[in-house]
Length: 484
Image (cartoon, rainbow, N blue to C red; front, top):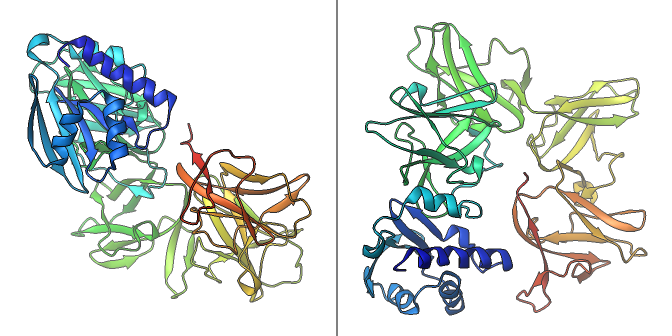
């Protein structure tokens, strides 16, 4: 890679490969540019086939790869000097300067502009499964989130000509989000939804983490990224100004008594926090003394008899049970509240009973408890388990529906796979019109599955994508892409 042409050829090869085939590994998580260096993240447990694919995919010298697996840390190929750094989990970083002697004047900003139309720099993905998060900035004005707008501020001690911000919010673009000069640094306003985001700054071509942000985590490419939360709730406790320490804890933090430290304010204590959509129980600890939220009238009793404050984030789902007009007490219970049979009391209506309840996207099992008697939902045909352990099943924000258009005379059709531990009793499909269906919520990623038709295991006849298993019978493969 002695010239800019050769360097660009590398990226063209990467692009073509990523578009035309799905490699054994994700090319976008292997190659990146950082601090004037071209860096590859490799796995020492890769097979010979995977090593060969790596060489072909990135136009690397096979001798170079062989020396890495021999344990060498400094490798010279031609006039290129490669460094090898050992990382945890059998990973290594292979790197070299992209400023070769033959091309000392390569301009990084120009290079980023050229490759940015297709290159996705590896980093942390936005994590929909993150339950909660709080920020930890050393400089109070380094990040401000208000009314859906996130303001990032980078103080710079020296002059910079161009500064960009890159992260999960712009698909790790290197040029889409330039920052503007401000007093003592650089600033940018972004419209962001509440949630967790990973990011870095690019200062005159140099990737850096946010020096004002203490929150960092290892990215997919092996380097650290800054992490920020766009908060959607403010815990507040008025008064108690003489207290030495006030924390908040709840089911979002597994009731950890250490809690999350709140900040003193002019009127008491507060803590901005991001909470994923759902229903939460919580309490404050004021100098280690437990108390419910005096400003929140929604209080419920847990199985141990403790009173807890309740908080909901996001839109609710309306659980309904028609009939049972003579019942005195109807309770909703499920795996979302530890099957507590006294906590979620339903409201009586002219048609029966109902309760709006907020849950995060996911798959849930539940039952109704009518005057102490457990029963599945008669209005919901989807169930899991059997006998007295049969539960109603619901998928909130469904992003996939398993379908089987054959075997309409079958008595029982079950879908099972890596998403439910390959259980043979759960996830019974329901016959609707001319097919069997089962709606489900799946996190982004790869899944293997099969149908069980009257006890016989079969591949999905409508899905041509499959892979072999240890029994030689194959499994159908499903890829779930992140929602946009």
